[in-house]
Length: 163
Image (cartoon, rainbow, N blue to C red; front, side, top):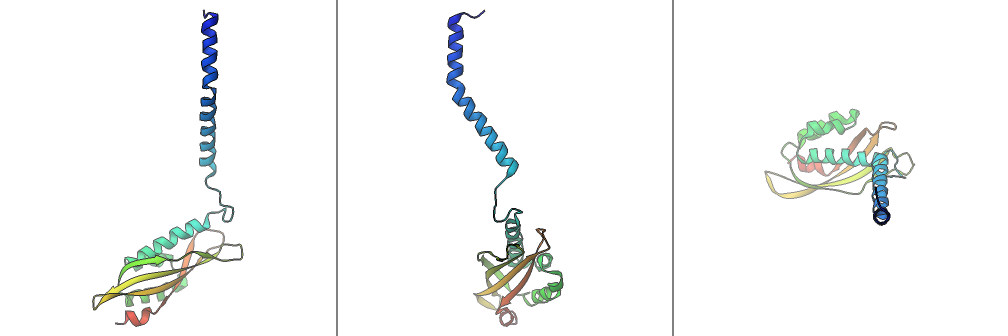
């Protein structure tokens, strides 16, 4: 059996550890709720902008590496033939870099359309110095899904690609 002195010491050590236990319990609860609910996005609760950024980055990277066949899956179905015609004209073009501008979401509150300007740095083996080509990517999604498709237009690429 415990004597009175031992019991008092045990109570003092338990009292001294109480703030530590409370802190550990609070941390555990906060991390649990943080993982369960994820990040709060009041302007975009369905995380459409994040998915748009992922789709845009993948599409633009595929273009940069001239993987047009893979990139065409991001292009709107009705524009894929025109996109592949453009890809054929870019057969000799080498993309060395790109820079994407800010994502401009539509203002109607639906978050269904977004525009992104991309500047590519390119050259061809016949012209040994670099040029910049600009692409305007207009992204739209199917209804409320996160399935984004691009309608792109290039400025000044036709004259460069025909060389």
